[in-house]
Image 1: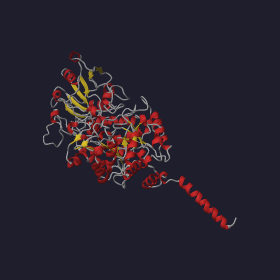
Image 2: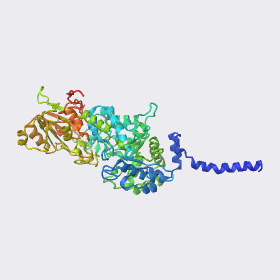
Image 3: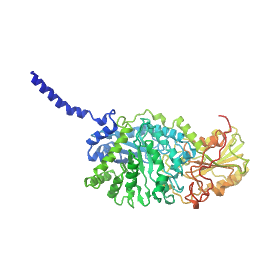
Image 4: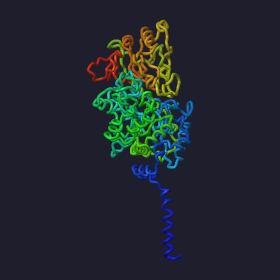
Length: 627
């Protein structure tokens, strides 16, 4: 072969191999490339249907591998109580998530989906998972490092089920306890809520020293993508009505409700969820000024903004009255991913129409997809799209239960201890002849955990694995002490039984969101009558299990001791640890305890501030024994 022919052959080989080499090497699949390069490379390959698919989040009940593949769906979520099966195992969860993921990986570009779930006080949808105290209790601990450790433990349990994304934390500043979500707030003061955003590095990992502000950060396979919610002002609605109108000037919004988002963004939070509520009559899901103007442009948030469940539907009244308009208003406001969650074909068709007809600019779509891809790359989904079973032993592990027990101990607020100055009832003696345990919440794990536990609204009874307060009492007292349990005893029984003392555990039944809105905040029956019956006949400590302060002033004088235990979760022994003096009381009120609902809303710093117990109040005791 001549030299001339050899050169031609080499040129042909170069021409032949160049496109094939390009097909084999895609920058977006190369973890050595900077994320910005990977995003740019992937986006130039994407069609409009692929981009819109990334902006679509659907519920697991309508998801399948085929749906993921056909519609390029970017995300799936499991709603409250939406599970692979009753008492599903971690393996069941992993297999379900991987099944959906395989559909996504089979698409032309193989962009992995991101599965999200509400894990608001531990991995609360999952049977046997550790259920930590709800946020109001964590606010009472005044312990940001404890909350960070809870975030890390939650991340491990969530990852154990193959899930990389949690819709937590709620960083609402609850200004009115009549709101049904008040227990999801760490407290009424923004400074306290800001401190508790330390849960974000617990969930996601600590941002490196040189990390750019506003850029999402997830440190590895044992961490999860977090979500600060609900942007913004959800805790300030009129009369505490869920999803209602927050009437406040801009200065008030930015000084009371916005500060926790500053901290969340500095700590690298990856996503932000928009609130159902309105600000001065404008729906947050349609508020371009705040979602794009303030969150994205002023605060320089670079993660993605997600709607709440059917959040864009509720831009109109009634919801869904003009869905096409709602899609247009929500996306143009700056929402990047829409929690549809069911009518995904309608959403995709409407969004496609709006883009094709220039009602939504392509630049807005590209911004949304760029942000979604940034989170997916930052969280390592492209490198590790399929979950394995290596972490299944993390679900409900003893170390996590011990941490939850510690959190319960630190969350308890002692409001009264003794009817006089020198007659403290607490700590209780472990060795007593006979004691009474009573009340609707003494032996009810579901009531102890509250809403967002196994089911969306929570439930009664042994809904998961944990320790009730009654079981904790029995294990804490001396073997010689007789423990009598009677949920609602009559007065003669109490008087005639010769009890050394009684532990009365009462409170609210579980609820979530709007179902928890409550205009009177009275202690549910038979609680008031039970307190009067038992405390009128023997020494008693009353333990209140609730998501917020309740009307208790009429009964305080007849109690010997009063403890606010909030919604403690699965580890009831955290309560007896402190009642019996193994540890001292240290918790402080995360919100004002009012005398009457007529005073509401009433918050620390208000001009007319005459509470039953002020914000930050909490008696302390010393441990009775050396551990």
